[in-house]
Length: 169
Image 1 (cartoon, rainbow, N blue to C red):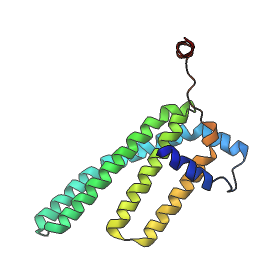
Image 2 (image 1 turned 90 degrees about the vertical axis):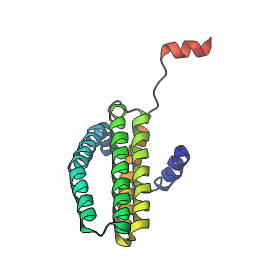
Image 3 (image 1 turned 135 degrees about the vertical axis):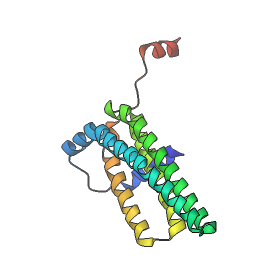
C-alpha cells in the first residue's frame, strides 16, 4: 500500500520545478544528519512534554471538571504522545540507511511523513481548526517536495555474492 501511495504522490511531483543537480546531491548526502537533528529535537520535546502533560492532567482531575473534558484531553494527549514516539522511532531507524543512501532510509522517511499526515487529519477531526489544517498540509507538501527531490539518489540494497550464488544454484 505504501508503494502505491509513493507512486501516486511521485506523479504529483513529477512536473514541479526541481532543485539543481548540485542541490539534490547536497540534500541526499546530508539528509541523514538533518534527520538525526529532527529525531533528537523530537525526543527532547517528548521528554520535556511528558511532565507537563502529567501535571496538566492532574490539574484537570483536581479541578473537578474531569468527565468528558478530561477524557478528551487524556485521549488527545495519549494520541499525540504515541504518534510522536512512533514518528521519532521511525526517524531514528531511517538514519543508518540514509547515511549509506539506501532506499530503506528514504522509505522510512516517507512512512514518517505519512504518519504525520494521518496524525494531523485525526487532530483536525477533534479540533476543527481549519487554518491550522491548511498550514499542516502546506508543511507536508513542502516536506514531500524535498523528499521526492532526492528519491532517485536512494537505491535498494545490493544483494551479497552469497545470496546471488544461492539464486543461481
